[in-house]
Length: 242
Image (cartoon, rainbow, N blue to C red; front, side):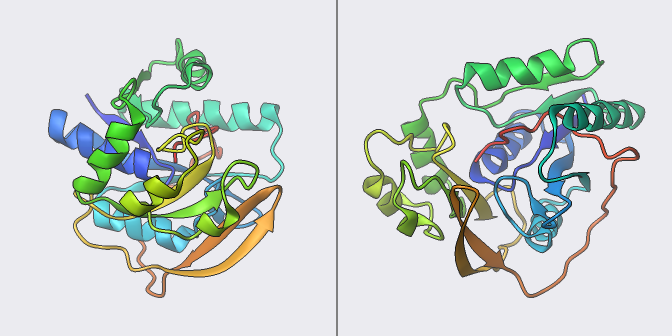
């Protein structure tokens, strides 16, 4: 088994990597992330690629980046996904792991896109109670900050906040503790999946496209092995986990 980890930079994908290493040591072989061509940032989460590279370095895994335009049509997205699937197969990957928790439509989308491709989807965190999972992450040493919030359901002032017990207590009862419905997204900065802490400071907070983003700036450039997809494809990462 050789697993490609769908990596959003967030806490769910980070904890999923930790679980994989506990349950099947040595099988997680690379991280895969979708990056916006226009902003040179991780799609949806808004994380700088310098922070992304620091995460890959701390995780000790090569990083595959797939660039997509903004906006991106379904046809372009699906075409780049198909190209990335073929590259992954050529590199000997057998599975793709996702950090999804309970949204059936997202899981079905990923399964449909991979069906018959030769790559099997994995969902190591699927079905776990999100309140318990959030507390497990925090107690287990994961440190993260909120990089994107939906101001329609979450106080914009939470952008840039630490993902910790205090934040969980401040969330409205209608908001999922892991932000599974897109209420917020995070960037993991420390935890058992990393060999070292990623030092990033909260910078400018801006509103764009109906969301509030907190910029995380990292001053040191770390560049692990980065392998752009040959035809800029994408393993399904529409709504990669927070």
